[in-house]
Length: 94
Image 1 (cartoon, rainbow, N blue to C red):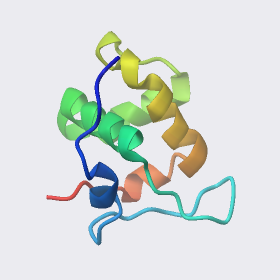
Image 2: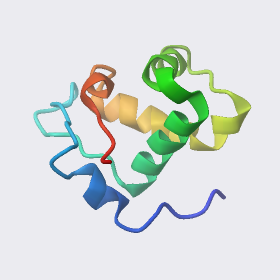
Image 3: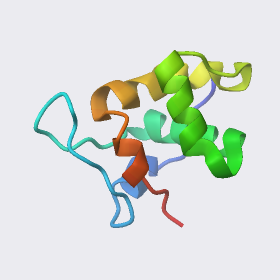
Image 4: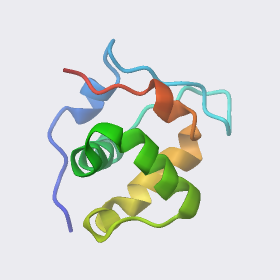
């Protein structure tokens, strides 16, 4: 319903400027897929400078602003697969 993420988003997410952490659910390194990366970018654009803090609040409460409700599943997947602390080390390229 919200279109396709930009081509190559996953490649950008796994570049040298991307700092994933170990997943809290397993021993594998988490890498956001294209849809998850796109959803994270939408959250950053919506929330602005304090986007990580505001996204963590959404993760903790399960409540998202209506503007981000279409990305809720992907954002919750990131939290569930990577763990909340992963977000502190995540950086967008550029």
